[in-house]
Amino acid sequence: MKFSRRNLIKSLAALGSVGFSTKVLAQDKSNPNNLPPNLPEWTPDLGAGVDENPYGSPSEFESNVIRRNVPWLTASSQSSVNFTPLQDLEGIVTPNGLCFERHHGGVAEINPTDYRLMVNGLVNREMIFSIEDLKRFPQVNKFYFLECAANGGMEWKGAQLNGCQYTFGMVHNVQYTGVKLSDLLRETGLKPKAKWVLAEGSDTSGMTRSIPIEKILDDCLIVWAMNGEALRPEQGYPARLVVPGWEGNMWIKWIRRLEFGDKPYMTREETSKYTDLLTDGKARMFTWVMEAKSVVTSPSPEKPILYKGTQQLRGLAWSGKGKIKRVDVSLDGGKNWRTAQLHAPIMTKSLVRFTLPFEWRGEELLIQSRAMDETGYVQPYIQDLQKIRGKNSIYHNNSIATWLVSKSGKVDNVRLG
Image 1: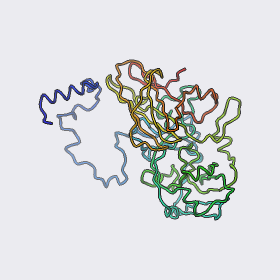
Image 2: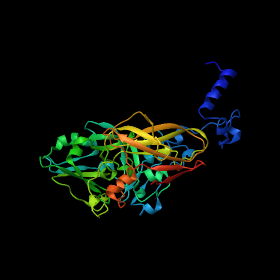
Image 3: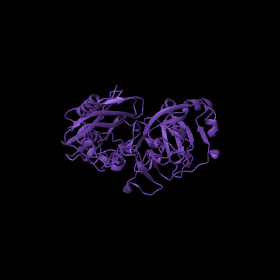
Image 4: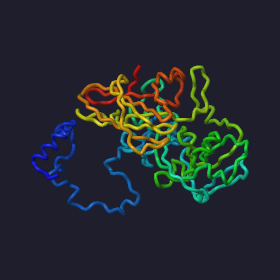
């Protein structure tokens, strides 16, 4: 298309028709000396050479995009959790340096030369594998989300933490590289009585979990890389277990042993911890699956609405049961729903990005999102979960959340009903 005054006017008119105008520039806090048609300050001088930063790092202007923790949730630096800045991310891939982490006894530093994975118990051949041994098996590359069972756990008794990162940030999504456990077990064989696996980590907390054999043979992996590079120490370097769609504490980091037995091992982490406490004092056990969930990342408490006009609502959805089929969005607290656009790729047990354009004229909004997965499961309200479990539980809160957008564009975490 040729540029002319007429075409320029048509283009500007088109922008105005979708809510953009010169009012947007009023929100611009840039240095006016660097705005067109002025020559920007970064143009006259040569930039830094690539050899000055051999391992790439983000721009200094993105230094606020980091993992964060909550002081009262952090017992010590050796027993802590931090949160992924979901509101600042694009697409579905979480950069390795921003993946949330939870450890119970600090980060283990393991020389890969010394690493060994032991397989024992009810197997035909007890074996020990090095990292190089594992890499000789057929390799798989899979995208999966990892979510802590306690993600959103503080919200059981009401809106507690005001932030997308703090409320939902115990989840990340990466591409894992490793070997299927079903392939590995062809070498060891399994005895008919083998029904459960004790997965044991090699950190000081001795993190262990029982996993049924059906899951192990279905889609579990031993992995050594994520997003194309070696696991980071806080993510289990040099090798970890991946249990797709199930709660993150079962994805044992620094995996050192798989013991096959005929019954669950009833370890500390699956008896006194990671159970769903009911109103009568009893606990639901073995509630492994992370069911369908979604979060609106913008607008959110960290991403207020800055100006009137067309907005792009953005969010993430996931399900431990398979693929996300649909996400609906409400701007009025659940009275009316619109179906959002799901962006490819849509993969099983992986985050999916959704968006929905809407017009904002300065009115108050109550923003919610509701995910449905391919099994037909629909994300519930907190009241539906509490009818079954009461308010004592802190795990498996996949309820619909609400962001309150005020007339100024500020966003807060609220509870309805």
